[in-house]
Amino acid sequence: MELAKNYGMGFQSQLNSQIAEVEGLANGTNIQNLVLENYNGVTLGNDSPYYTNVTDLFATASDYAGNNVNYYLYDVNGYYITSSDNTNTDDWQEHMAIPVEDITETKILQCSPLDEIESIDVVSPIIIKSQIVGLIRANITSRYFGSFIPEDGSAFIMTNDGGYLFTSTGLTGQRELETQAFNCLNGADNAKDYGHLKASSFKNIYGFCKLSDSNWLYLIKQQGTQYQQILATLPITMSITLIIILMIAIWVSRILSAKYTEPIFTLRDNMTDASSGNLDVKCDVASDDEFGDLSRMFNSMMDIISNNYKELSASKAALEVSEQELKKNYAHIEQLAYHDGLTGLYNRVAFMKYAYKIFHDASVGASKHAIFFIDLDNFKNINDTLGHDYGDLLLKDVSDRMLSCIASDDILARNGGDEFLILKNRFDTVDDLENTLYSMQDKIDTLKKSASAKQSRIKELDELLRMADYYEDGKPVADKLKTIRFEKSRQKYKAEHDDTLRLFYMAERKLKRQVVDGKLPAAAWREEKARLETEYRDLQTELTPLYADMKKLWAIHYNIYEVQHEQERQNAAVRQKKQEIER
Image (cartoon, rainbow, N blue to C red; front, side):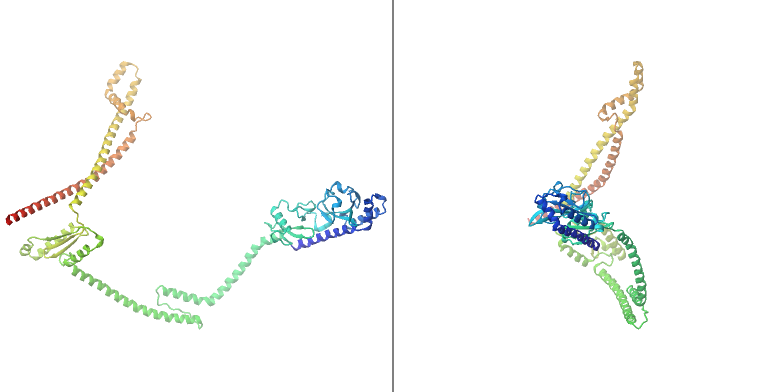
């Protein structure tokens, strides 16, 4: 950045010196007199007493600039008068569109067409009594600026219109850098007067300096090799530095840990052992500092905890023994209170308790229940003849048999002696039984219908397969018959294979619609038949238990109606006898 600033200021200084030189020449007496002769119509040319003096003055100024600056003099009409360069005598208006009289102040012309070399022009009007009478032009080549504008193109000037002086290519082709430079020149984004452009790589670094006097931007390119080398070695240098620092830190941390953290780790390990259940652990940190105090307090605390834990463990063991004994006692008491001592069934108290609970359970709703009172007839005779031991065995056997006959949610209890009670939780009516029978009958009818359909299809497939066998057996015979040309031989062949041909022609007529592309789907028929036979057997397997259940249910239904009919008969007899008594 400093290099661009210094070089930019140097360029501006050299340019300002030429501006001052041109303005000084425009105010020179001999130059004004020579131009004034032309302005007044006195055209003496080389014979003018001022011509030689002005020409020598231009040559001296050009030599002083190392012949890198040439000076030209034009009259108000743009006609050439004299210069320090005799090779270029073109008039002003031959190449310039702007008239001389319109140039009222010193100007800088960028890459003037008056010269084919890389140059710029500084022009200044010659004014006498507020009247423009001529023009002085200083043609400045890039060599005049020396190291400020080197020939290798490493430094160049961007103008306010985005172009470049001295036909330099500048940043052409580098759009991002060219946009940054143009923004810096026009003051966009709070641009500074000097700095460097932000490039995507360090291959080339461009510094810039804004030339406020001419509103140009001076740019200088520097090779980024040194920066690249620094960046290339920077990761390695930083890595080595970090490794050294890390090694030193590890070494210092080990020394500090050995002195300060080892007691902490020892105490932590002891506490871990204690939390795992080892209450006899002791901390052996022997020192007079805070760690020693912590170790001694830890040991005291563990002694207290260990003693309390042992006492609590003994109390817990005693409580567990007492709890087990209480559970056994409670279970024994409950067994005695709610169960019969002989049969192990519920007793009357338990039966009443559970019956009350079931009858008052709101979740049961309007379900029907039934209570059966069962009494063993002539049980007293067994006790009197065989003894009470055989009577007890009979009661146990009856209890086991009745348990096997009731549902899992029914309740069986011994009421006392030879009396038993059964609470039936789910009680079905005759209507429920009939609905079940009708539902089972519907299911049986559906299964029978499906089985019948499958059986019909199986018979149909059997017939098709039988015809297919006739067709396949007789087709070679029929084909051979077609090849026999003599009638006598044909008749003889037909007689020999009469049965085969008869069955073939019958099968051919019946299977005419079944032939697809000259072939019969016999394999598909066999697969379908095997599948239907399997399904038919499954249906029969499902129907067999349904038939058995239906038979049992109809038997129950019949018995129920027999009982109802007998009950009605007895009721009718009672009513009749009652009527006879009342008479």
